[in-house]
Each structure stands twice: as structure tokens, then as C-alpha cells.
Length: 122
Image 1: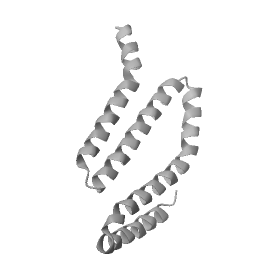
Image 2: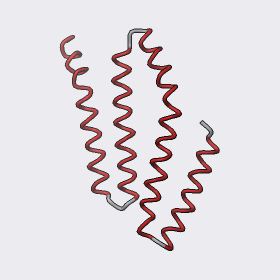
Image 3: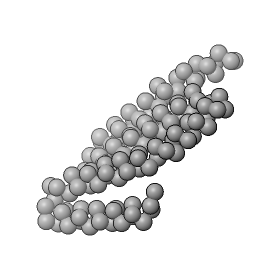
């Protein structure tokens, strides 16, 4: 991942967004959303090889199930954070709160089998 390319892209997106806010404010949220989605796709492509390597290491040590659960929870948290930020950028703070709540509930649902296993050990 080239950090300078990411920063350059974000600076260019910021400039375009500021210009649009001044001259055509109805398109500014769309530009922010599009640049955010492009950046998210870039990060996902960059992270894929690291996730594959870590998954292999976790499987070798018998931690595959736990690591998969951790990855799912991380994916839920990142997706809900991006959604929440996008809602806040568009001025919809109530929807942003709902996105955060949905993420918390989804992570809770993911961890219920782990809680059940821990309670069985007691």
C-alpha cells in the first residue's frame, strides 16, 4: 500500500468536494461517497493477501475458527463505521447512530456461540 498515493487521492477528493459544495452542493455528498467507496475497495484489495497469510498461520496453530470469527467481527465493525461516517457526512446523524447500533448487535450475534462455549466450560 502506497501511503502517499492514498493521501494524494484523499487530497484530490477533498478539493473536488469543496468545489462542488460551493458551486453545486447537491452533488457534494455523492462525491464524498464515491471517493470513500473507491478507497474502501482499494484497502480491501490491499488487505486480501495479508488476510490470507494470517488465515493460514491461524489454521496451522489450530485457531482457524477463532480467527474467522475475529475477521467477521472486524468486517462488520469496518462496514458499519464506513456507513456511519457516510451518513454523518450527508448530515444524517440519526441514520449514523442506527448503523452503529446495527454493527454492535451483529457483533453480539457473532459472539453468542463463543459465549455459549465459555458458559459450558463453567
